[in-house]
Structures are given as structure tokens and as C-alpha cells.
Image (cartoon, rainbow, N blue to C red; front, side):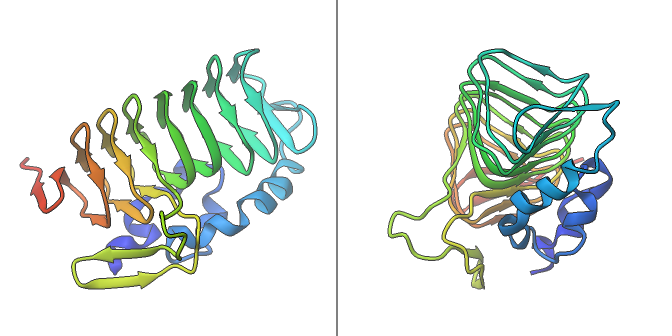
Length: 222
């Protein structure tokens, strides 16, 4: 499924992890190595730009991190990012330049591109969020199937085995997810697409689309 490839979803110049992601064809292939990559990359960061806070945690000096936020490594918080009151970053994460991790938002094993906003009561686990994507208040990624079987990415009759038990969502650049939506395991949303509030999303949503409900996806008209 070509629409699921990294090069179709992301501008890799908009993340400090661009070189890492470029090694893979599909974004979920990168999930297993995020922690190790952060440790290696963090050790190379410019000490005039980033400060080391505890074990395997690097925070840009220009970033704003609330005292009440909980930071666990391996973790990189890039320049001008904002981590707000009560945020919980569990580790194995990269928070991009100018990104916002908001109050009561939980982050785990993610690559968050530059300019992403997850600002209010979000859970984002085992996911990759593309440049300037936005998750509305209360929207979450569900990263484990209820029957605990391995996640499969589905697009119509096409199926791709991922080999992963934990896999949340892959959002392309400039995706907008409406408030209180659930992105079920293995969800992939193409660039510039929008998801209505209160949606339960499964499978692949093509680029430049509006997801209204299951089985009702409309093309965005210019």
C-alpha cells in the first residue's frame, strides 16, 4: 500500500529523527527502535542548545517545561517546544520543535514532529504524528487490540501484517483530529486529512480526505 509509506506521509526535514525514519519503508517499522535511537542521538546533541536532565533526557534550553510535568527517558524535547502542566511523558519519545504537549497528556514511544499539538487530555502511544498535525481535546490513540492479537493495517480488502502487538496511529503532515475521537490500533491517516469529532477511526484514511464516520469518507474539495 503505497499510501502507507513514510515518504507519502511525512516531510522528514520536519523532525530531528528524519535520518532514522528514512531507513524504513513503513512508519510502524520505526517504533521498535525509538528508545535506542534517542539514546544515541541525545549523546551527540550540542550542549550549548540542549541540557541533559537526568538519565537519557535531553531538553532544549529554549523549550518550556512546566515544573509539574513528569519526564522519563529516553527523551528528547526539541527547541521551542512546550510541555504543559501535568503532562506525563513515559519515555522513548521525541518532541519536535515548537510542539505542544498539553495538560494531562500522556506520551509513550512516539515521534512527535515539529509543530504538532496534543494540547488537552490526549493519550498518544506507539505512534508517529506528522508535521503540524493536531489532536483535539480528549482524542486518543488506542494502541493495543482488545483481544491482544497483532495489529494489521487494513485498507479496503488490502491487509498488511505489522508484527506488532502495540501500534497506535500514524498521522501524516497537517492532519486534524476532532475532539474526543479514538484512533484504533493500526490507524493511518494521510496528509492534510480531517477527522470529525467523536469519531472511532479504523484502517487507512486517504490523504486530503474528511473522515465523517466508518464507511463515509469524502474528498476535500479545493
